[in-house]
Image 1: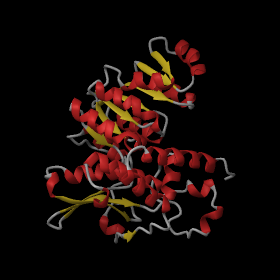
Image 2: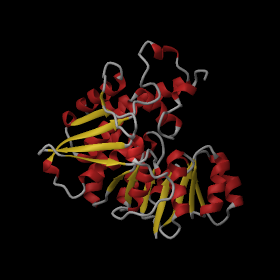
Image 3: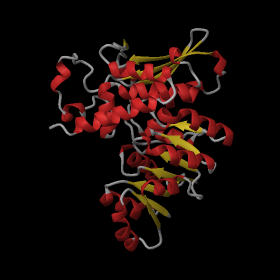
Length: 338
């Protein structure tokens, strides 16, 4: 039985994590969790999974929940996230919050000796040097939840890092992969959220449409796998079946393939180094798929990806600045009529 501290229980990654816990009650238990504004769903999650500690985003939600669940400790805001992350009964932190708010809770969990299953891109983008160094000192594993980084992690298993020549991160191209820059001028929020392959949260889906999410993944890969930016490549792969590849110095490539379903990498991060049965994704046949397609990235078309490479190479606070600018830009885009 592995006890989980879950940040972001009502979001896309959070709810899919709970599906896995629901399917494997013999393997997992929710020790502590946090959620934001979706108090109605949060209440249902508390009723079902019975955590011992809960954090909510807003203080005004505390009194009603405390009265309804008198046996649970409640916190709110950033302090609450940190309490959940470091909660002593949890063995693993699964960080599925959005934005740089995930950084301090992650560092707290590392200091407390938790395994870290990280789905919060911004934590590594804004402070990868701090997180990686803290994890190294505490001998805490950083287990990637993103499908691309999970694929790289699996493709590296059993291999010597000195033999790695290149990391190849695949990208679907997002909702607007076939539109020209001119055609993008009047796209709507609704169109942007219509991802061709994946079911993700709104912010991540928008970042996928601009390929900014792939830029964040490049910066993450730099920190997770200690690779130079020149040795990290992005490749358009429309089917989202090959989740990423590792190229070795002898010319061999090792890839991880699977259905485009986030529950697969989430469960792998939670069960590592073991694997468990999964009934969710429909088993797919490569024969039925027939063909897999790969294309070079047009960096003039996807300028956000080029900016991410540049920011990563500059280093320092530049990735933090880039991430903050994107968060503001996405918030502004959501204010447009859909």
